[in-house]
Every structure is written in structure tokens, then in C-alpha cells.
Image (cartoon, rainbow, N blue to C red; front, side):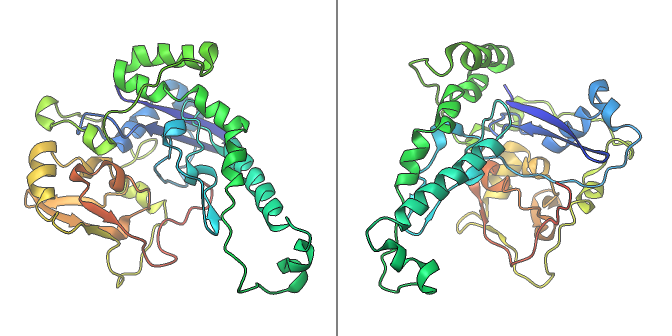
Length: 322
């Protein structure tokens, strides 16, 4: 019942960019997305593209792929949500760049129209006066959301709105059949909605219901241990800054009593940067300096005990080719 996918692109002059996507509503707490990615690279169809090359960069992030059902209000006074921050991602295609570009175009047009409406708009514009009028009202350009709802972006997302939930409901076989039917035949015209019944963190089931997964050891050539790859992310935080990953008030006992004892500490497996570890059995250690700002822990953490706050400016991964 694990939803996901993969991608592999060739880039000039001699680069291969590849990745594995795992839906965070998976149930088995022993599943390790990072190690699944390493194992995926050993498939003959993938290995052929990678053998003889050198791994130059590593990274990870959470995708906002809730799709049509999860789109928030897009505007607020003085601002708006565009692209992936709004969730304009087609989860079936694992593609969102085209939707992000379209939302930028629609936003620019809506903002321009809002700033130039009225007979004296040209005289009042910042471009003409060179300064911001302190008495000018902070606008909320609601026209942006109205235009997006009429665009092909909403049509595309609506077509595949039930595909992810179908995997959760009926597993891989039923999910594939439904996704093919919805994306190629029904085109979003089905009159029903398949909804998720729980959050991603609530979807995790007790470890007692599963067997531990034994993953192959990394070979250091095609597959790598986590800390070796973490160096390729170039992540860095000042040593003297406060940890930006904090246990929520009243949640001090959750790591020990819930995460370890019920779910076998899944944060030690789903975190793609080795931030969370337990010493002496059940004492949590948070290695915030390792964090690559993927936000996975704010989505999948048992009991939601982590408060992900903004770190000091400049800290985090230093991606160059991703």
C-alpha cells in the first residue's frame, strides 16, 4: 500500500539526476526511504545509467503532493502562495514545474491588474513616484485564486485527485488500475471523492504488526551509507545557534513512550539526514546540525512531538547541481 514513484533525468554535459519518492502515509514503521532509494539504484535498468559515474551530490525534501484536495487559500493581504508552496504538484507525474510557472504567470497578471486599476493608477504607481504611499491599503489580490481555479492547472490536478488515495485504499494493484482509469479514461469526471482518513503520522501502525526489514549493506560505489551521502549535501549550521528542532511543550515523554515503545523509533529511519538517534535504548538525541530542511519530521513524526522552527539564516544544505 506504499504510494510512490521514481525519476531519472540526463543533463548536460554528463550528469544523471535520479530519485525515489515514497508517500509518507506508509504504514510499516520499519520502512526506510533512504535505504529503499539505495536498493532501487541496484535495479539493472537504473544501474546501467549510474555505473562508472561518481556520486557528486545528495539531497532530500518533502513534496507537497496532496493535490487538488489539499489546495489552501491562495491569497492573504500583501501576498499569495505560488508553485509548490501552494501544492501545485501532479503526484502521478511527479511533476510540478509547469504548474509552478503557470501560477507565476497568473499571479503576475493578477497583481498587475490590481495595481493599475483606477483612472489615476499610473500616477500613483511606485514606478512613477519612486516611493510607497504609507496610506495605501495593503491589497489582497483574490483575483489570482479565481483565475487559477479557471486555469488548466486546476483541471489537471482534478483529473488525478483520487489516485494517491486509491493506493492507500486498495494497494498497488487496485491503485494502479484506478490511476490508469482516472488519468486516461475518466479524466476526473468520476462523481466521487476518495479521501484520506488520517494524517501521515497517524497512518503509521504499531511495530508489533510488522517484521523488521533487512536492507543490503552499501557497497560504497553505487550505494552509500547515510552519513557518507550527507556530506554531499553540504549541510551546515553554526555550532552555537539554538536547535531549530524542538520538542513541543508537554511532549517530552512521547519519544520514549510512544515512538520507541509503540513504533520502534521510525524517525531514525525516515529522516534522510540522521538527525534523530536514540542512545542507551530510549534517550533521544537530536543532531540538528545534520538537518537538510526536508520537513519530513514535521509530517511523519509519531505524536507530532517535533516543532520545526526556522534556523538562523544561511544554514542548511548547500545544493549546487540539484
